[in-house]
Image (cartoon, rainbow, N blue to C red; front, top):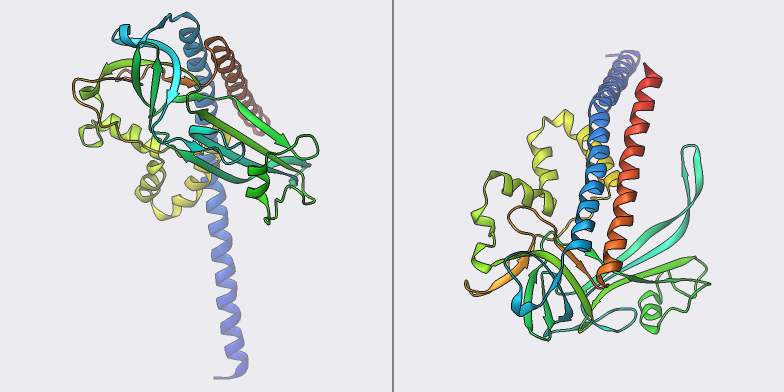
Length: 331
């Protein structure tokens, strides 16, 4: 075999590989178009529906009378009191004893995505602590457990921005030595949300008997899928069920849907509290009613929920209008 024959064979293999890759790219783009637009439409309707449900829950917050722990009746109930815990944990920035706390660190960065150039806040760190599965609410008549699975948390937050605010020592120590050092050159913003121990807590949810709470093994088909959505397991199960050539486009579509809908954060599928069967507990309920938990007063919680819901509605409408514009433009 001559050198020219070998070179010709290698060139043929290279051309075949390039042609195959080109065909696969075309197939991928076509499939992505088929999957992406339905996913965006679903995202738009999902965000819009979430806003409508939020407005309905805001009406429940505003119109439900506040009860006492000792006299609360079964069904939808509204309570206000103190958040108590046997094991308070200090918030990482402020050091305040808390039932639980969440921390986010963001950095102002330039973005060069296509024709849209500018700067934006990008999350670079997240921390949390405490017990975020069951909350105990206490008023002057007694205590009531609240199972926080699927709870809508409306928490006020403290924000510190470099150059404008003075970060407490705990935050400075957390960032010290990292590339996001508070005394460094980057523009940094720190956000802390917390449910303070013995602090005010507002709850709107379903009062029910503890033995009626659902365990994982007691689920029906719909409830099992709901748990998969809550925990984020549905992504992998859906991808595993698809043919290999569809997994790439579907993965991209799922990522975009979660980015647009704000549903990317995976919620922990917390187990029911360990209570006696005769005890009562507040939770979301079997009918999927509201479960609102806030460290604010009733009026402030209703206002925050209403504003957030209006933003969801506007976002859903914007997504659907953009899709309609793209479809009419290409037709």
